[in-house]
Length: 257
Image (cartoon, rainbow, N blue to C red; front, top):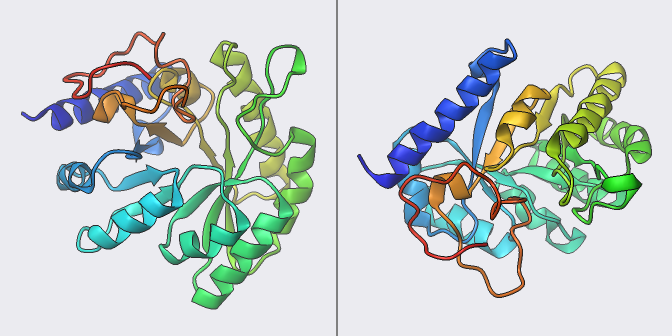
């Protein structure tokens, strides 16, 4: 068994166990493999094992892998902060966009979806704040901004609102942060019943996210191993990785994030 296969089985087992603990059907929680910085061959290998959803946070890397892996046809997700001048290029890949945090970005994606005659599936990213209400520095709309932004997205013919996405703040336990996300998701569903999904949870906190209702967890390190990033660059979608206790099996890159 390859390291990737072992890691995939271990992560899926964690998700399934976390769902059962809170009485959820494990089939209701999908796994998004965050493949940023890893080569296309690793995506191809995981796809051959049955993994379908893959996430990138840099536009150029997404575009390059989408071309290289056209024969595999993975379901792409864009999980990074997105500039308006690059939004159309991301939309053309068919990627699900997890980071809609302002109306101006929604407008550009809406136009791209209409031109392609294929609605862009999007999540609204919510800033969960931090200790004592401090900004999370993770990006996202403030919770009080979400209802108006959701109305914009839901009213755009070139978009389809799937739900909310968030990253747990650094320096805070994930449980209260995910509780705030669950509350925001409940309010969203009251206005937009079809927006039922929650994109939350990573290698170090996926159990807490599943307990809070996550339907899609974004996992990178526990699948691929630790990434060797330039000094000072943190893993935007892997909080507290250096302190988390769920070490990936067969980690293939030395060093810490």
